[in-house]
Length: 282
Image 1 (cartoon, rainbow, N blue to C red):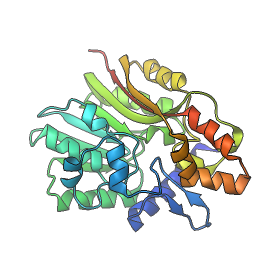
Image 2: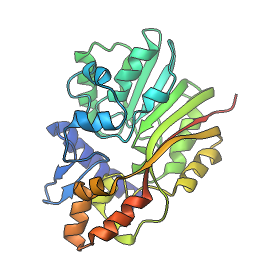
Image 3: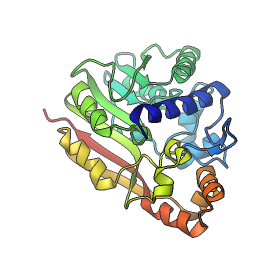
């Protein structure tokens, strides 16, 4: 799939989520099932609690900021402090930006970057309704960040970099905009072994954060190649087999391509939710 085709597909799907206020787990206009990293069978808040958010955090958010689209809670591990400048890649409706805003305070600054105009509209409305004066949302691609060199203290991303067709460029950009001594804190989807072709070639699986994922060592290798040091894996967890079989992406592949449940189980053992940190050298 060409890079621009991939971006178009992702932009359209996430634009639909923003406009309709629903998870991308559902039926597309072509009547095929699509999904994000979330589980389609449970409420968004329950998804978010499973990903590491806590009820108090979720209750403090503007209505509509939590779309249940992530695979972790990177802000919880970011060690943000008053006055920090924070950047979120693929900020969506703003959940991680709003949580970060409370930690960096009025003297800090929060920037969210997203390539989907409808998501930006939703996030900006959420910022207004929640009176978040230290948060701004910018239109841009994470491969070409609309952010100045050496201007950010910490960057997070929550199940978004796997959707990029040029992950090397993403990590190059994060290295550029971070201050010396700045940090990455990423939650993402990686692989323990190569996926079969029927997954790699599935649009539903790509938008569902699976088909675009890299092998774990290759992914972390790109981080180091960009210049980052002190790369540390904080946690990793494979998909639970039964949860995967309930996922709408998996069901779409089973139904459309007549893939067996055993093959889907094998895929589940290959897909990992990874949390890691890294630092730009001083």
